[in-house]
Length: 303
Image (tube, rainbow, N blue to C red; front, side, top):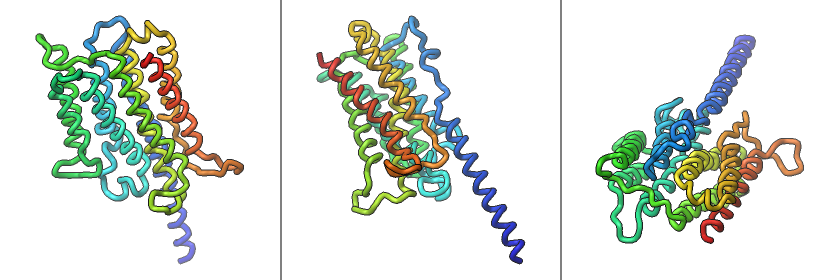
């Protein structure tokens, strides 16, 4: 009896280890968006302002819905944000928050000046992406986010229509500052969570909470990494006039890319003097670097 119990325990341990390894390497593969902005919009190819921005944002959300295991936060308990496959769930919760802010600024500022009306497709997409990420029906998160993708692509089609039916990106520096303000605020939230030792209710941050903060912050970085590349192509003139801006863009994109793809097998929270790694602090180094570069970009845009 004891021998059989030992065998079953061994089988269980091996199975659990195999599941976690599969989830780990599956996540590493999933974290890289199969979308190359430079190939989709090569330098020198004419584009309508707003086309690259909207297309990239749609690709980011589409990848989360239609690759791997799809949208995780509203899944069953074992696959949702509470057990086993929670890392991608927490990452997707960070992604959708960054998508919401990125779409909001696009709708409110980058395509709108003063008393101009809002672009209809962007209004609908912005509303869609604000649906509860944990809702699984009436309507489900997937249903609304798919509709948001549809309206971003409808916006792009409207830019290409004759005559155009969508509002192009205005390419004004003053409006672009608002985007970097929104992104800086999100990275500030990530920094606070990566350093926090107590929750808002006063409870300590337990070891099983650490990876939640890690992957949520990583979701922010994922969106900004690809959207920074899109913005760089959408605003060629300011970068030509001020070469320092082009350098700052590259110096922001690099740490965001590192932050977006960090994938330790286990997220550890070692002490500063300890032998074990502290992955929250390691991730925060990239987050803080990107945030500081964004401050410099804002200063250059304000001059």
